[in-house]
Image (cartoon, rainbow, N blue to C red):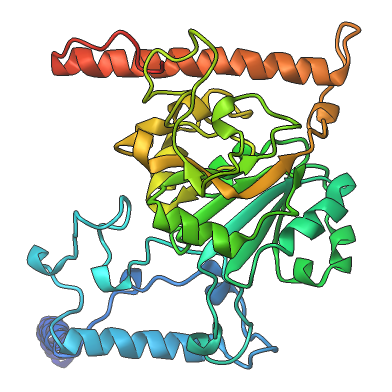
Length: 401
């Protein structure tokens, strides 16, 4: 009987102990919950680091450890939380700025940098002290090594106010290092491409916005009678948004508009052969420069860049359409006569072609140029026709003539 009584008391004690254990667990969980929410919380998903930060332990060159970087980030996040600017379920605290550039709407406007430049910077020191002097203008040349000496002479005509950018179509870059200026220049090398291919891909308006004027020049130009600083003064004096130096009339001349006149600083119109100009204010009698040595203002280039087609790399037809980007075009486009150049007509680009069907390489290149001209005219006409139709407007007879 004693054993039975003892067994009964044990059975009664087990449920009490189980209940006590359950109650302690519940109380502990509740207490832990309230203690947890009383501390500032930071979601790791809100801290974004480059993958290299997370994967490496220590950069021996800088002495910065991953832990130090993380500590700084956690501290910043806690401070933001304390100031009421950290993560919150309140959607009104989420950043969304529709006027920011596309894709950057979730960033605070103060951190958005939509434009860049070609300014070279140091790897050390204060960033604010990197650039004691900033070039105001940009000149680009599309070059091959055969024209190295000619480009060297051309670059010397441009002061320190000009950033120099060379596009190398033959892949040969290191040979240019014999020139001191080349060590400060920007070099971009892609084989067998044209300057308009480079311009579309590397001269985006947001990249070159730091420069007031952009020169996009060929490699076969004689510059004995040219001074870039004086040229800029004349462009500003005559309010030219798109321009080119006058061409010496004895060589490489296609259009009367680009022929140098010896009795003036600038001209904006000309007389062409009978039947070539349907309107004295339209190309090729006015509002016209060639594509061998154009100079664009920052604003004009922003428009022209968007007009360049990705697949039409020779740029033929652009010269007749440049007037679309300035208004009034017959006043804002002109030729600077008192700073002139010589077109040397070096067929270097043609030599980059490929022989097909027994034809010389240059013949295939020239055929492509002509074909692109027709394609560009057709695209422009169809685009404007579609626009006028959408707007319910009767289009003019021609949009390119």
